[in-house]
Image 1 (cartoon, helix red, strand yellow):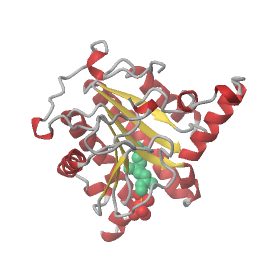
Image 2 (cartoon, protein in one colour):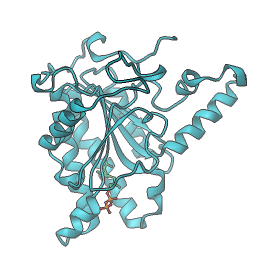
Image 3 (cartoon, rainbow, N blue to C red):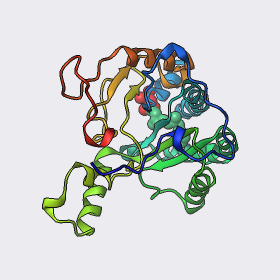
Length: 268
Ligand code: FPP
């Protein structure tokens, strides 16, 4: 098997801003290496309080720091947060403008703290549609944190799984690779997430039980955790509960119980 470019936190060079990551013994060895979250329910959270939808997004955004810190403390290596789908452009213009303002504010206010915590910021999706200052701010934050290794924090913004697969196929075709040479690893190497392990655990808040075009390729063997809790209320304790539940699952990757099952190909 070809080697993968992903290297675990423990093997990476020390970061200039690393804080030691305690591993909570209560979780044993079953800590998901990569957790991806569909942060859903901001609008309903606001509606329940008679607040405008943007207030829900603001509270949801405030929750990102709480969950990112908790994930790092548990010992999760990669956290991917879906903040905006390619389908979200269908929302009212003022809501979209508000989310873009929130994103700009997050980048401006949180990058220092992320850097201090040893988090490496990444983006998947497309930056098209964002004004050039915002694109530059996102790219600068990514560049600034690129040597950090405590936690890889990937923001899926203007992202969808089908968009990613189409981009990967276009990239494969334009690379001139022959049809016979295309296999799972070749396709994986053209995904936005090519340097990330597949998510072990995908969490969706707000009681919806669907993937909605998120990480379609990468979720082939993911465990799912659905909770009725709305995203702004999803707490560090809720994250711990999801991790505990993950620890109770038996992952077989198509094998049989009790055998030494390993993730096929790209998730190893
Ligand atoms: C779903 O709530 C949430 C989103 C559209 C994405 C999450 C957005 C944030 C946390 C704020 C933006 C964050 C950044 C970093 C830019 P919903 O509006 O679909 O809620 P509903 O289903 O209750 O209406």
